[in-house]
Image (tube, rainbow, N blue to C red):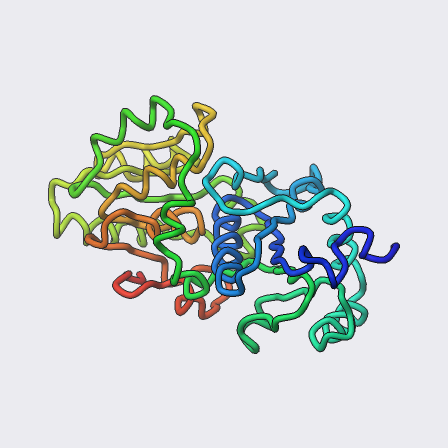
Length: 314
């Protein structure tokens, strides 16, 4: 691979100092990656760029093909050129020993390669050291403390650029103090590979959360957001009443679901970053937010990073 100076500005360039984030996964993951990078870029006073090679290199064997959706939101970032993204892909393709040696060299200033900064380094050292070259963030960054300081900015930026579809605008008047958003994710979560990582939430989790909400607000309206509407109708709507929201059938982008979730007072989350963002960005601080006690199939202590003060783990 030729020298990176062909792809990135040289160390004496005014463009050398910038922060680049690798974005990957579905919309919920994209929001975590953007939010962390946005906060870090603001603290370091660096321009923010996005590496989107994940979406151009997905294979047909992927469990679910993901779409890069940040450009449809009011985000404050720029895109890299194809050559720049090609070089970053090369950096990550090297073997582990080479990657670690290169990271050390860049960390101590012996290399002008972009400094690859992951979550482990961030937890150990905090912010990347100021150097005259790019910082390249790689990871999922699912820790609200990494960006909670810019929550107001994110509330403005993570909104759709486009006017709301008719189906969305017609539903808004029904939402408010007496409504609850309940997210039930099945779809790809029912496949063996995904289940090994995330598991599948039991129906008892949802029954308990609904019961607690109904005890406080007996007349509350329930709105179920799900990619398996018939199963939700058979399992919950027939017992509790309510409505199923599934805009995928109307070819509406998923960020409209998050946009709607923000208008609810009460939330019942799936073990999914998708509904997490709907609750995090909600317009009111009143009401209850229920989050699964077990986020992954294998026990991992993640609630210190995903559980906000006042949220209830079941």
